Length: 426
Image 1 (cartoon, one colour):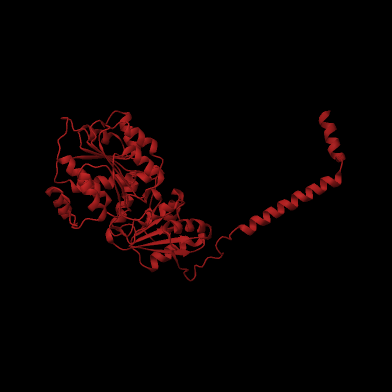
Image 2 (cartoon, one colour; image 1 turned 90 degrees about the horizontal axis):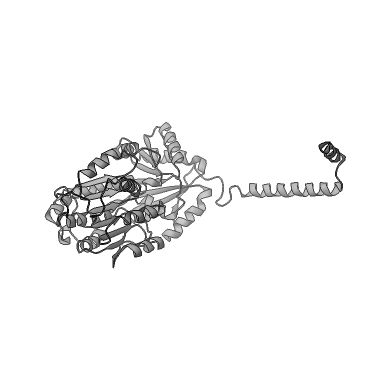
């Protein structure tokens, strides 16, 4: 289906055409007409399916077809996202698709100064794209007026719940008019998400364009079993031997991301790290350099598993498997986007076998495993330190048994013990 058949205005069609898009994706085909009709939306779509344009385009059209009720341009649409990167990406989409419309947007998120954001809000806008925490900062300082909101978008709302934003979201909702159009977009339809939707949405149109929690079909997924101590060595080999020029690597922790980036840099690979402890300026610079090819490897924590919009990213590597199986789907969703092929590699050590089983259970299939010659794991899965723990228990049993026997043999307190008791009394 082409965008011309979806009922979009000429200005929006022109902007879409200039971006090189002609055919709408499934989520866009179903969401755009429903939003244009004023319906609440409860949509599930995996990353890379064109979801952002699916709500941005009809939102822009609905705002452009009406006039503000006040001379002062208080925002009429609010888009909430879980991360700074996703907020910036959505705001870029708003500006890209709305460039031929008299619509102004402001993006607000933490990690940067608030003064410039306050100034932009005072000048007036139609759309605010925000992360929950920084938006509440503006609410508490009375630097934003949310009383005129006509449309609310919760983007990646499952991720916002995972990150503990539910209380912030409810505080924000208390500031909004009860009469509004609400759009919820999520990668999954979990029980918690459905419960939230039941309290926010009015007769929503439910859209699910992909099976629940499935990874993108265009992504080739492969597991390399390897000892934990040799993961970095294997990663460097894969990047160098295959001449990968753009690789996104995921670790579990911020410290692990920094350490791996330093080690890869010593291996001669241009590498940068991106995680929550990095300043927003550093995160933006690292992502820009990665997109422009100045950085070959970008090491990230799960803060970057959503919202990173990188055209035709060919390779994603799970240096460490995530603790939550759903995060695996979000991570590998950074590649294989918009119909492009991609490859997701997971380096799995023996102590991660239970995490791998959880991912395979979620995907409902076994992932292909390949042992590279020279990098064979030294221990079979599920063994590891078990014999050592058993020996420790055995030593404790022997120690306790010998002590019991010694006390039994003594019967009475030793003379030394009696002398010490008399000295303490004295």
